[in-house]
Length: 115
Length: 114
Image (cartoon, rainbow over all chains, first blue to last red; front, side, top):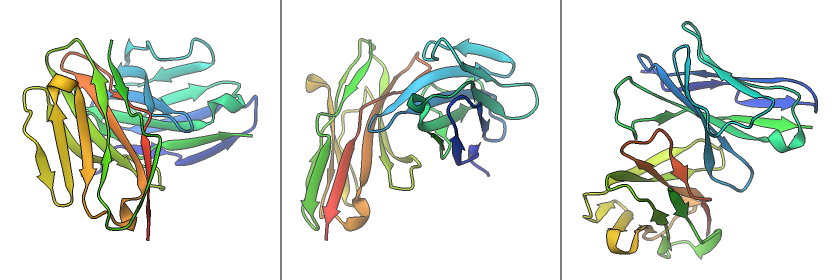
């Protein structure tokens, strides 16, 4: 009964590099949500995906950020040309199809540091 | 619009003192869920409690208790006889019945001094 898995747990990138964060949902879960926690702040919603579909990306920055959840494999949050302001903890959550809204289970997070 | 406010940024107490963490929320939805999470220094989110909007009964779990009052849109969390292991950041969060996303407060950092 593995929970939501995220890797890497810690990621260091230099300004201008790309960051790829992975989220493996719980078994049977086909919905994934990404949240960002900036230093000293609460988590903020970024994007909600189902397999091969982006359902709601209202919280995604317009540039440099993208997310996918392919038919096979983990969900990927990609940040291109990272800047210092991207340093944050990125959490993903997953849920079953048809689950109630609150039935999102959070992973342990990936801490991104941009130097 | 949904919003969660945790006005207390940092709190320090001496071990064995009681402490209450405040949470005030805003929503126009009639059905919603309120949560408290603990975030220890290791960084993961630890689920503490969920309350739905139709259940205003207070809840007690060991040293933890929660006071939900719809009249004041508050969902406060009290730790009785605090311990050093309670030191963490605590987040209050809200999600509506029809929404996709959690709305988190900015968190209260609790330090329990031995």
